[in-house]
Length: 142
Ligand SMILES: [Zn+2]
Image 1 (cartoon, rainbow, N blue to C red):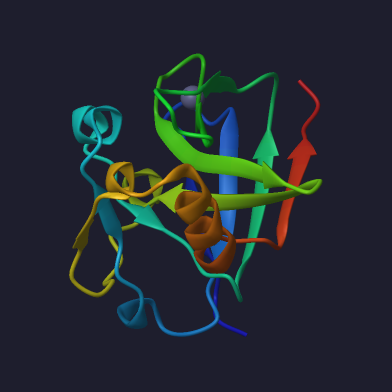
Image 2 (image 1 turned 45 degrees about the vertical axis):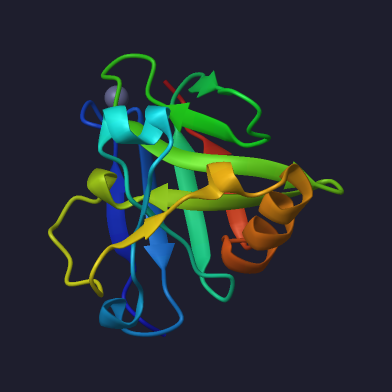
């Protein structure tokens, strides 16, 4: 098993542990060109064969933009953008914003991505194939 990558928001209310199925250098973050992701400078990483554990204190800030069917998850206190998430048939799929990782990590070169050019059903198919499905969110005590 690969060592997990740790990340989280700036104030520590929301932290996560991302375990990839291969070396980080085999994964290319995707820099989404939608106006929301551009304004955050977000780049997304996911691994359908990996695992993601999220631990949060209190509610997250959830933002759904435009026609997108995904929710963006940010910290309501320190405003760091952490995750993109969507639900399908009762299960959740998540992508991680690599800017929220604690340590600089040697991923493959970033790739541009333009999901806004995809039809809604194409987006959902793509995210279902690519995003983390082994996701567990734990609420921490205050
Ligand atoms: Zn925070």
